[in-house]
Structures are given as C-alpha cells and as structure tokens.
Length: 144
Figure (tube, rainbow, N blue to C red):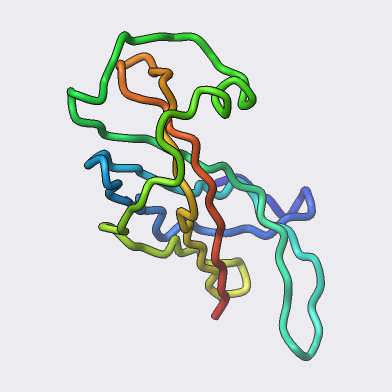
C-alpha cells in the first residue's frame, strides 16, 4: 500500500466505488463513476473538517443499435462536440444510485456521489460506434 501521508495526503481505503446509471429518454444508459486518487486536508476546527479530493470522472454509455453509427477513434475538442449536438438536454431518470465510500486513516468515513445534471447527444460516434454524449454533473459529498 502506498503511504500517502509521506506526501501530505490522507491515507485512505476505498470501500466502495460503484457505477451510478441514468436511463435517457432515447433509451441509452449513461454510466457515471468517480475514482478518487488522493485526499488532502484543507482545514479542521470545532465545526468539522474540509477535504480536497483529487478524482477523475469515468463516463460510459450503452446505446441501442439504431442510435449507433460509424465507429471513430478521433478525439474531438469540446467546442466541436458542442457544435455537433443533435439532441439537447435529454430527460433521464436514475436507475442505479450509490455513494462511494472511503475510510480515512483516522477512522472517519468519507462519501462521494456523482449526480448527472444535463446530457446532450452529438452526431459524433466513439470507437464502438456509440453516440458521444456531452454531460454535466455535480458531486455530492459527506463525512461521518
């Protein structure tokens, strides 16, 4: 195990990092996960403590064949994708809902959960031929 404390970060144990899933009105599924890389202390006082979390969002999608197109390995700039939106602000419902859970070195637990706030489909396709979606998300956090 890496000793993060040597570098000024919390040592932590990942207890759970699950996918959250959202079904779009076009019947595609957006998969959203946060992976925590490191956690640092910001401040601690009688009211509680604040953490700075370095993480990466992992996004995937499952799409019906009728939405798929010609596979492409091309990497698009965000601006180009924004200009290629064919369906904006698609309605969705959450179908898998889970909090990530981490145990900090001092025994406290830290929780994160990604929330999808907006999704739009472009006319571009990924290496599997699935449509590329632009998403906006937020992260909820809590400690115990």
